[in-house]
Length: 439
View (cartoon, rainbow, N blue to C red):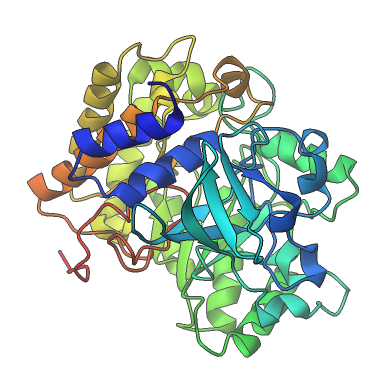
């Protein structure tokens, strides 16, 4: 392929059942995009919602390497429409890469566009600054710092523990930069609260609830690093769960409550349910047994892959299979030095995992791997996985769902190209556009 345009167009032709919007979206998520200064935000003082760095960096460079994009943050997300490919509305999480062949810039009339190989391929929309971001907490902290929203305002992302107790080369997941992201924000002098006080979270949610008059925010996610000991005297289930309990008591039924945590024993999972959590995300990260051990050494050491999977199945008995939605990091299957060498092998392995969970009524989701440069796998694989892998995964994912009669998981908004808001992968863009049905 002589250019990135040729690669993308070849894949759209070879896989016509995958929405063309998803092909571009996956390419942007895996490889990032560059920003002309004309497309950057004015941080929290401007009219555009800036990138919040809500848990990971999701960038292809450290803050000092991003140039002006480190001083004037890019938008949290962008929307692609129109252009020569007649793209339907597509929400894409921003992952900055100054070396990307994709570039967002304003034209002579000030209209933002996405350019590839020097050609304008789509119009770009940016998220307006929400009214709730313009109001501070009583202690002066910003809502964006305590309770940022993503997915075009659909999801409130509450990273209440900004570091992970899997620490060092022998424990950290090899693709994850949560601990580095914490360090780089602190080094840059940015506000980046390590453990968020529950009263601060409630105050931020009160501001969102007051000013989100359109009720665009529909769900919240409680998440953060793994807890192997305690935080503030609480184990993992109690630590994350006590936020859910406080939120549900203060705002009963206002949002769909979700928690991302380790695959915990049945009694701990029951505590999540008792605290008011509605959806549980015990992420399995990567399916292959050997790759799980190599790329998730802390999880293998403290829990183990087989026990992790058993706990996922057990949790379905508490939450209901439809409300257990484990994530995997799509692309690390092909990461050197231990990953699969061909797309065929990687897709076969990942599909095996999808079939395992979906045969039990559990619908996984996935995040498109961003090879952050401070991680071992990011350093060794700066280009990430081949775009063909990501496109074929979308095809395999949809086919496996159809094989088991499943529909899009709850808590993600509407499925379908032109309708989906989930911004860190295209799985929702690639599902049928009909309203989800209960299974």
